[in-house]
Amino acid sequence: MSIPDERNEAPPAVSVVLPVLDEEKDIRRLLDEILRQEDPPRGFEVLVVDGGSRDRTRSIVTDMAASEARLRLLHNPGVRSSAGRNVGAAAARGDYVLYIDGHCGLPRPDYLVRLVQIFEATGAACLCRPQPLMDLATGDWARAIAAARHSWLGHNPGSDIYRETAAITDPRSAGAAYRRSTVIDLGGYDERFDACEDVEFNHRVARAGLIAYRHPDLRIHYRPRTSLRSLHRQMQRYGRGRARLMAKHPEVVPWALVGISILLPAFAVGLAAAGWRRGIAGVMLAGLAYLAVTLIEGVRAAGFGLQALRTAVVFGFLHSGLFLGFWRGLGEWWRFRTQAPVTMSRAPGGAGQS
Image 1 (cartoon, one colour):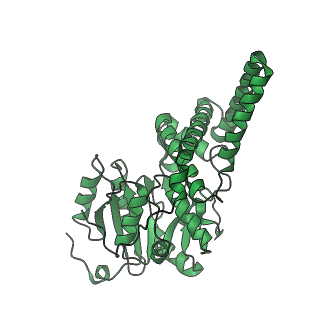
Image 2 (tube, one colour):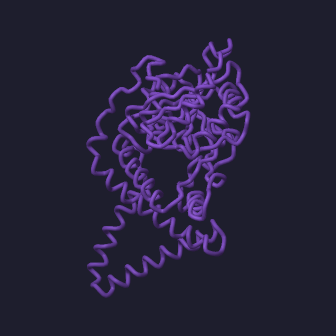
Image 3 (cartoon, one colour):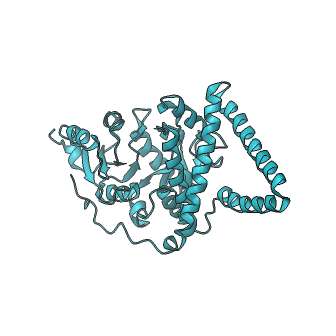
C-alpha cells in the first residue's frame, strides 16, 4: 500500500464512481486510464462499486488497490447500477461525482482537469457528455450494433449522446457528472430501476431547474454489445425502463413506443376487417416496407456490403427488444406510480468497503 501524501489526506476534488458487475474484460484498462489522469486541484479518488461479480473483476480491483491509495473497492448489496451509484455517492468525498460504466474508456489524459474547469466556469449542477460507440467496437456484429445505435433509426435524434457542441442543455439523455450536493439533495437514484435510472434521476435534475451543460471535452468511449442476443436483452431492459419512467413521471412519454403500441392493434383490426387474403397482403407489404427502410438506413450507416445487412438485422432486434420490454414494463405501472423510498439517508462515507 502506498503511503498517502498530504494531498491524498485532504478531501479530493473529484470522486470517480464505477458501478460494475462482471467487467473483467475492461476494468484493468479503464482503471489504468483513470489512475493515469492528470490531477485536478486537490486530486481525485476512484470508487469501484461491485454488485457481486462472479468473474475476476473484484480480484483485479483488489490487486490494483493494494498499490494505489486513491482506489477503493466497495460492495453494492443492491446489485443494480442504480444502487451502486447511491453507494458510491454516499462514500464519495469529492465535491464532484463522475459516474463511468465499467465498459468505457477515457480518450484524454486531462479529463478530470477539464471536468473541474467546466463545472467551475459554468456553475452547472450537472455535466453531460458525448458517448460514442465506435472506438471500442470489436467484431462485425459489435460494429453493426454501433452503426445502428448512431443512426436516427436506432437512437433518439434529440439525444445529446452523440453531439459534439458545447451548450446549456436538457440533462435527461446524457447527464453523467454532478456536484455531490446535487445527488444528495435530490435523494439519489431510484433503486427500483435497473435501466433508465440515469434518465429518471436526470429528469429530476431538470425538473428542479438546475443548470446542465454538455461539452465535447467530456466525451467517453463506450463498448457496444457484441451479439444480437445481448443487444436484445439490453433493449428489453431499456424498453421496460421507459415504461417505468412514464409510470413514475407521466409527463415523460416515449412517444415512438406509445405510438407503435396504438398503431399495431389498429392495424391488426383493419387487416381482420379486410379479410384474410387482403390481411396477408397487408402484413407482407408492411414487412417489406420495414425491411426496405432498415436496409436503406443500414447502407447509409455502414456502407454497401455485408455490414449493411448486419446493421439492418440489428435494427430489427433493437426495435423488437424495446417494444417487448416496454409492454412488460407497463405491467408494473402501479408499482412505479408510488413514491420511491429514500435511498440517500446514509452519512457520507457510510458505504461498506470490501
